[in-house]
Amino acid sequence: MKIVVAPDSFKESMTALEVADACERGIKRAIPGADVVKVPMADGGEGTVQSLVDATGGELFYHSVTGPLGDEVRAAYGMLGDGKTAVIEMAEASGLHLVPPCNREPLLATTRGTGELMQAALDAGAKHLIIGLGGSATNDGGAGMAAALGVKFLDAHGKTLQDGAGALKELAEVDLKGLDPRWQHVSVEVACDVENPLIGPNGASVVFGPQKGADEEMVQQLDNILEHYAAIVEAAVGKTIKQVPGAGAAGGLGAGLIAFVPAKLKSGITIVKEAAGLADHMKDAQLVITGEGKIDGQTIYGKTPIGVAKTAKQFEIPVIAIAGNIGKGSEAVYDHGIDAVFSITPGVIDLEKALENGAANVEQTLYNISKMLQLSR
Image (cartoon, rainbow, N blue to C red; front, side, top):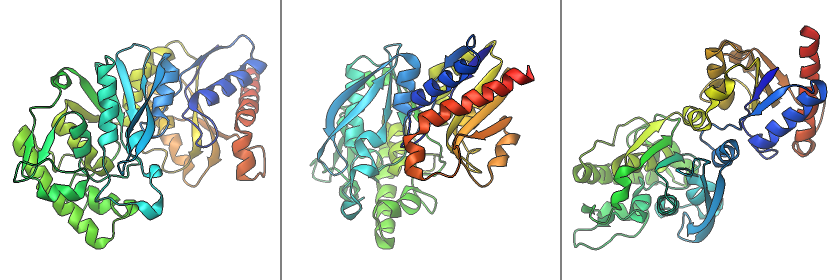
């Protein structure tokens, strides 16, 4: 029996590979001869780098880069097993978790560190980049990222602007002469699961600015700045970025990537499935196991279990999902390719113990599921 195990990570408890390993142990206790194929997954958010590195036999590379407020932070990108594809989570270098709530300042925050990671991957020989958006502390339209790649943002006197959205109100010219020409020969896929444009009532500043520390007045200021920024960038690069769906992701980093590198915005789970070769692994399988920390009514909106299930259904393979927490609306997943859902929680237990014993609980759950499979066969 061939079983493909393709879970997401269980946040704060296990990486996707650790979940897959625990699944394998449980399956093989019950069905020693089972052929278990492990494909760690992610949806483009937190854990994507680790999952794809694990799935492809790749490697992590650490660099000191510029943090959201200009301080130095340690961040990693992954080089996948093909030696040509690099994967980056922008939050590694420019994430909200790097800035204490009392210090959050979207007028000053920069995506420069994300650009430095991109440049490091390019220098290491990457020909294809996967960049996960989300969890950003920034609202600079990707200007800091572009500056790290060699773009200059100048005021009316030809002086280079400082990093951060606040300085962009003085933007008069975008100088592309220093942009590394190698970027024109690299494909960039951007994992983006929101459709917010750069500006306007559904834009980066209005929707995401408050969680980054912006009050009502600053939100309007940020939106006006990004509108000014977009007009000048569009004239410089000959591309429209303001109203592109997804351009507002990560404080407008989506827009910056579209503008300055050959980037395409795609569903995160779609990018990860393709990079991990999930469909190829599923050929001739009799069962697929997937899962994530919580399965509820939101799972159907671009989350890993549904993405995995859609691929499995191309081959008419049944899908079982496991979760640490099964929440309200979870039954919706049955209309999207998942055939059964199981909780790994053995009973009434506090969160700390549940996280601590996650691997053991996954193993026991898969042992029980596998015994049931034996009975049904």
